[in-house]
Image (cartoon, rainbow, N blue to C red; front, side):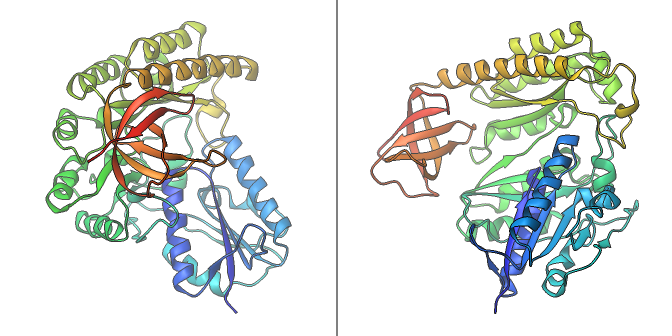
Length: 437
């Protein structure tokens, strides 16, 4: 009888990609995905530790998986197992703990793993020579947009971040392999692919032959056909004029940058060990907006960092308020053991962090409204993504510049690029009408 499996994924797009690899590999070995109400034989939790809250959510997911699937082999894989395996080993009923090395062999191991009285720990330290582990994914079942992991690892060592310990040194997928996977995803019906990595902007630095993200995009442009390409998060120094001009000049490149700012105050950035200054960011945003007027600019901001004074927070708020930003991702700081920031003085009271996060989320709401409203009357190519649940006759879709559309229609095929005119806005995004031709 085929084994039934469930995969629970927390965290970033890289985790989602790696979960897709595990799923595809298990399916190719004759396993089947369990339905929501079925007990599984295998439960795999791909966990996250980027914040203390993410770690807590991972432990909750593990315990829920064990409780709901009492006869299953339960494994946790990824960053949590790489950095804190002993912490996970205390969870009763857990059978396997695997880190971030050797994931290509995980599916075969899971096929033959048995229940354990104490969890088996499979973890290796990263070394300076650790290579990029090729985890090919041919399709993302149930998704119109696919992710393609082309980079792993980080060497920035921001003072609040545990990820360099979890993911190891910077390393990249060879360009020809990236293009092969891109074509495979297109052959399997995907109309958009998001290039992703732990530190995407450092793509190619380990090759030492001049390869970088911009040059990879040139190679993709020479080989592609109809698929559109989106970039995941980048840091300000990694977005050069060559990348901006390339996006401005190629309609298959999604007009969307998601920029990791974290703070709008130079002294806070220095304490965070971020290697840029606010002026670089503001000049960059102005330049991008000048060259790509309809671009969507999203920004990560970390609020409540140790020692963040009110004037420093206000500086962040005012800069984000005044720039042509489309949306914010607001992260309240939480102490992450194993990082420098966990031991810095002047840790802020949670109530102050919560209050400041609420102010930035209010700004985010206003930014989204202003961005959407500026496009009423414009026409976009929208990738249809399915039907709105509980709202009959409304299809969902996404434009290249990250506008979420609801489209009144009797029949629209999922996973198609269609012309849509923006006729209004709502709390979720744009209201669109399909256009002929």
